[in-house]
Length: 206
Image 1 (spheres, rainbow, N blue to C red):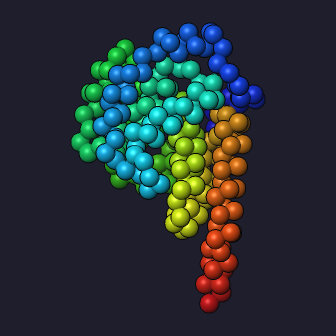
Image 2 (cartoon, one colour):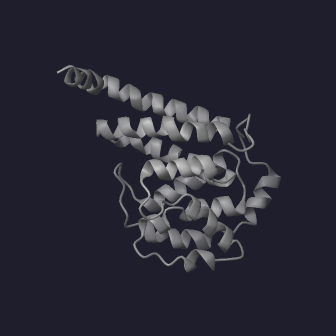
């Protein structure tokens, strides 16, 4: 693991210095690229474009105002979810394009890479920004999981979050770690309330 960079206090309001820094970050060109994800639906409803915007807002909510990180959050699923995506669209978008592209590649599954290998790669060798971006991405996904009723999927996703994302969040942002814990707890409570876990235990005893 790398050096810890824990945030101890979640910002409650953007100050003027942060506002001016954000004002200088041109996100619109990347939002335009992300609109290609509008037709890509999600299990919980909505589409992948909205998920990119959710991930961006989560980063802002946690006080991250870094041009490369924010731009990457807006297009982080384009390469993975759009067949034959032209990588040059990101690389040449603006002066940050190459750095944004490199960060997006870090959080993109490689060809032939399964989910566990992918998450292990980010956890073990990912940059600080890649881990922060992946944690924000997972917070968005865990919130959306509240609209999913496939109990097996929920259980697997919670297990995956605990095993891979918890240690990632603990390394880079303690506040994200706390939110992820709470989100997993609510989803596991659904598994209890729905009777899924009792039914699973009975099946395992047979």
